[in-house]
Image (tube, rainbow, N blue to C red; front, side, top):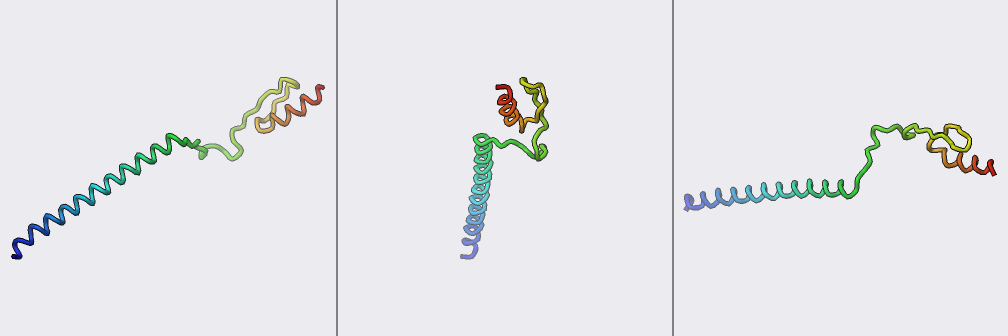
Length: 85
């Protein structure tokens, strides 16, 4: 009786191990696919290499010829065009 139970327990444990391994593998693959899909549909700009103020870009005002920082250009242009009127 004991010799008949041994193969059954061994077979059962192998089957449980196989199912568990297959399930974990499928979950890992699913996680990778979902992460890739999320990154493709929601691209995130990498900002780790940029300084806190962004890139130092200057633009020349066509009205007065001054070089203005990109983050202040709109405000400058509004004032500069108001002066011209």
